[in-house]
Length: 327
Image (cartoon, rainbow, N blue to C red; front, side, top):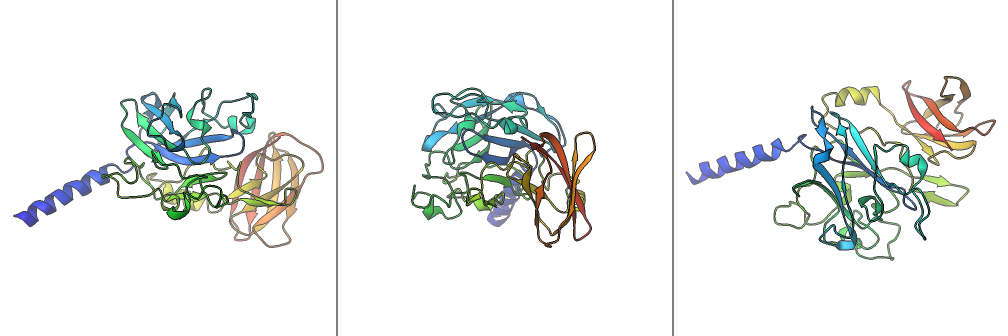
């Protein structure tokens, strides 16, 4: 009888946990850029539209157990099934020493955050949550009540060596994307009795967007990359498998947003050629890649601005396209 009861309880728990999959919104992308170029993307893994006015984003600043000093924002609007909603820092002017958010990033927003203090003033060591109006946690990024110093990384013992391992934190000066296999948010704070995790180990659910080498800066740039904002791959989506076929390879632009008439297109496979067209469909650049590698330099003949589209053909015969802005 005892074994049967335990098995029944286990079955109920398994059913309960399974029922949480693909049932509520969660954070799908995290952008921690320079200055106040910060934001998050939220994903709806369900088959129904969700009214966002029932949710709040909260910031638990510098290890605080409350969001009082970190800021609280009530979301607005509706998020469609298997779609995203983007919340971006709303600062547009210099305030003392606080610099504004990049306007190119703000153009991608579905909602601009309010003035400081607000959740999108995070800087790598702040926990973020999505919560229902009643305070029920829907998703947690980081660990509430913990200050990791510079930020969280993939080795917990290094998360608290502030200043020593400044190049290691994933959550500072990086863009992170939730893995497609993640089907629900983190509902219990790491280290709590209900949580299966003791620490916030970033690599368990997140991938970092690859950076690029900048010859002009003589540095590897990891911040201010937001090519993936506006869509999210998730196994909750019934077309996920089809999407993998449709979108076999990805491309990124460096720097992003593009500034000037020279930039790099980087692909997840070897690039055969790149074609750039403007907003009215005119081809302004086309070139074959002679180096057989996954990146290619684009040198435009004149300084342009505004919205453009890159169409990339890969050596395996597949193609992909992406919109980008030239400042």
